Length: 416
Image (tube, rainbow, N blue to C red):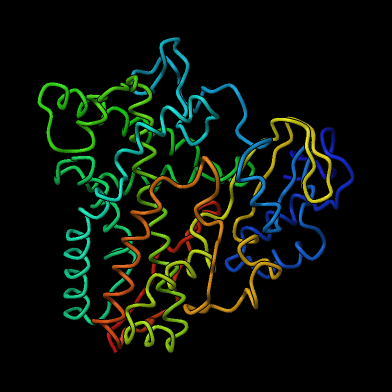
């Protein structure tokens, strides 16, 4: 891997503390990477990790990158992804180029597409989903009480967000089981290319093609017979119509982002609470702490750990001169534990007065689904702490093998 990326920092980066690619990979892949992040941050807020590549660990520097300005995404606005652009199950634009999701675009294309999709995540829409989320959480409580021991990930953290986003889109109940497999395959390919194990990119491309084929057919049905769902609204356009390629890529994004982030928020949060049972008990006694608990979880063990950007114009960051074209990897998990921003950052504390964190990003790319993820997280934490006060870990959880999306594969719990 070091031979592929290079040990030093080449053209495009000024004087910088250098870190071998193997060292960086070892730290970000660690099950508990935060100690390694702290060691790197003690050396510099911005470190070079390859030819024309830097990693950002300091909160202030990370926030500057995420806010945009001289940092954004590489051009062109559409790129070829895995697969053959001639494949009918790969979304393309009018010129036959494979379409990218709007989160990987710069203005004005990003602005237009985000505005269209943003209509689905208004406060009114999110609030309208609350009763359904509460119902699903209640069903989980009944299952765990009856079974005494369950996997919280498989029984709640994974199916809850999938069900919510599927119902929002208008996906038939019988088809929703496939969403988890597609989403999981695509999420595993969300890491930078140098972190991907063999075969992961190919599996993600296959899942994406299946997903696109499915939604192309469902969108065609909605054009003929619209319903009261998000898919019908996106198909109709209501002033700004998406091309078919834009529609299909956006639906893929909504599935993966709307599912994986919330799943990891719930899993990481419940693990932190159950490892700190006094705080779990405190939350059960005082539901008013739930908002702060969710924000502390997002800071303490962020569901999204890495955010890639590209330098769009020559600039300075953390005392390092960066030229246009330099790749920047923001280590969100490291920034959210910067001791200059937070007192005793490695301590989990649901009473912490967290004024801000970077778990959902900053600027124009701030997570569109953040209100929905927060709502689901608050209901899960509040209801479990209140209704299952004796809940405890029933074994060692298993971490997922992804890095960008940090979460759990299993979380065994039992009613005490």
